[in-house]
Length: 234
Image 1 (cartoon, rainbow, N blue to C red):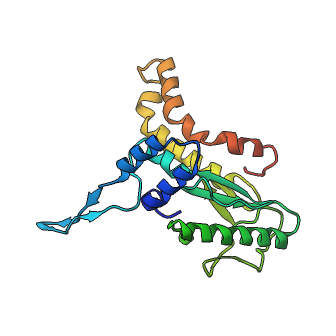
Image 2: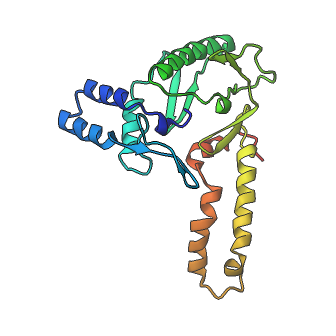
């Protein structure tokens, strides 16, 4: 989704909250008040535009805004044999099947349905950040491409999702090598306090390593760690 938090349609959100029997009416009124009467103007030097009313978007920085966004996309369409993974405004669709053509057909149907839903609720899909990737042993990309709003999405050899990079063979070197490089840079920046001649105690140096270097190496390792035994990532 492109600028998803800024595109939440206020009237559409209130409509969806009313449709949910679990949200009390008094709370909906509070949320409506929270979103109402918000204005903005643009200023360049001494020039100011007229005040305009904000009719979409949830205030970023508010702890309530992510919850409102989740409720807004809670009725995102689902399709048989297609799995949807969501994290904030990052969306992933995937289908697993031995026939590539059937997988593409399934995904195309789901993408079309989802695109219609996105347009209905005044959101916008960021096609520039949308990629397709086929995981498996096939070396050549499929001739058929998935289309979004008449635009064909190219097949990629690698992709990154939530900071984890995988290539089409599910190898990890595209993810691990940059992590090692960043960890070495962090170690270099902290060398004066981490080297063996440092006056800082060993437990403190170990704590610094765990706080600043280890997280770089092990980011999302719960997701990619199980692939190490089956992946030629070295």
